[in-house]
Image (cartoon, rainbow, N blue to C red; front, top):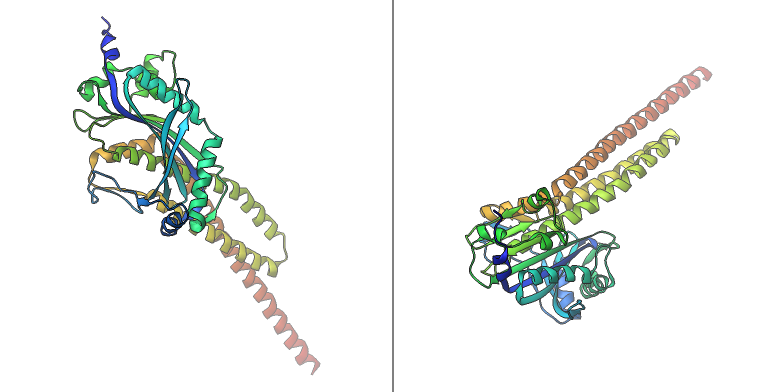
Length: 377
């Protein structure tokens, strides 16, 4: 016999938050020290360095703590009336800006909570960035000024949506929460019933540490039940999204660079030997510089969050990275870097061989000239 669905209707959200993220790749790197100083001077509001709130630093810590900026509040128009959202931004040293809108909710039924989350998703817009996000990003750019090292147009972005509940209308164990609540509309945005297989896949990545907390991850949404107000799980999800965005940037950068590299190599081979050898060396140096820069930045991205002793956060972090396909994109970047490294080695060897051939010709000519001069005398 099917379980009675009526208890789910009686379980209300007493207090919670809906968080909409949009992350942008804005520069090769961000000088966080300059960003803090410039923001304080131009915007005249305080900034702070991000840290995990309840986890010991030796267990989980940022490699370079991001800078958190306050952008005030905005009004979001929703079908049931406008709501106010607190706007914050985080700057990561590897060139990513994460902007978050936080809408507080209270005394809503679970169905109403899911509907409001979906309404906010529609209000802030899907990719590409709507005017709202562009306006907020421009405020951040102007506020940090020269802190952006080699800024780039924001052509790549990631978005993510999190429904956070800090208190239900009654105390409830995490193991019964999934049974009592229909999380499919919140996690998928779908209003039509899903198949049993689709429901299992949607709820597959769920984690609990205490009896009264729960995290459910999907590709673009998450549900977090955290009665103690701990934000570490939310921060970990944001870092994983930032890593995905940056790896996507370098994957696309190398995708465009490889055909150009092949064309340059072919054009260089058609040149005459001595200038060609110099061009081979110049091209090899250029490729080496690119490999060094990309390797340095990807290592920063890989080490953005150091997880050592906190097993629970480590599981969530690893699951988020796997779910967002960060290892897959990172492996693609490594393969393309390996191709460029091999090309650099081949160019260097070819330039060396070309120089050796030219020197042999010069030596041969000099010997021939000496013989001719000796015969003439």
